[in-house]
Image (cartoon, rainbow, N blue to C red):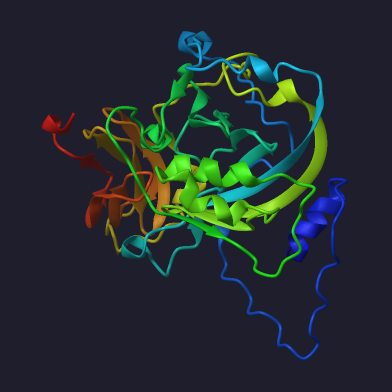
Length: 359
C-alpha cells in the first residue's frame, strides 16, 4: 500500500503491515502540479459512519420505514473486527467538457465506511456529493439491496436501486461502469475486513456483486475505485473492534436528521469569478447562471470545464460570481450520462435542461 495511506494509518493509531518504499535517488523529481485551487473544504476526520447533525431538517427526515428484513440477529454487544476506511472521492470532468485554462475545481467529498465481514455502513461526508450531505447507506452481505437514510428519512432500496437514487429518482433504472483498482503483489491486510466494499460499489453502479467480489477478497483492500465519473482514493485505514449492533443494517438507531436539498452550488462566488469566459463581454460586469432542470433525474452543471453544482429534477439552481461573457456550459447526470452537450451560453443567462414534457 502506498506511503500516504500508511502515514494516515500511523497518524490515526492503526498498525501498518510494511514500511513505505524508499525513494530512488536516481529518479528525477515529479513535475510541479498545475496551479489548481481547491474551491471548498471537505471533511478529513475519521469518525464512525453516522450522519452529521444539522441545525434544521425537514419533517420527512423523521420518517423511517421498516426494513424489508429485520436485522435483529445483529443486536448484540459481542465485539467484532471492523475496518474503518476513508476514501476521498472527486468528480472527474468528462473529456468533452474539459478546459485547459481551468484554475479551479469542485470540492472533493469523502466516503467513510465501517466494514465487518458481513455488515457495512457508509456515509457521504462533505459538500462534494450530488446528494444530501450525511446520507448513510447500510448493507448486509446476505441480502441484495441496501437500507438508506437521507433527507427524506429511512427506507429499503432493492437490488441496484442505489444507482437510481444517486441519480435523483427511485423509479426506473440507472447503471454505470464500476472499476476497482487492485495492487497486485501487495501484502494482504487480512486483519481488516473489506469484502463488502465491492458489494457496495456493485449496488451503486447496478452491477452484479459476484462480478466485483474477487477484487476485495482475501484481504486485498482496493486503493481506489471508479463509479462512472467519480474517482475514489483510499486515504486512511483503521482496524478496530465494535459491538455487532453498531453495524446493524436496518432502521434501528438512525443517524441524526439530515438536511434535504434540491440543489447546491459547489463553488463560492469568489471561485466562480476566476473562471475565464470564452468571450468576455465588452461592457464588463458580473452576473449569475440560472439553471432549470426539466428532466426526471438530477443533473450536474459544468461551466468552462468545472462542475459548478447540481440540481434535482423539476428544480432550479443559481450560481453567482461569473464575469459577464460567453461560457461553455452543459450538464450530465450523476452517473455520467450526457444531458446537455457543452455550448456557448451568455452569462448572465439561463440554462434549461430538457423540455417541459420530460417530467
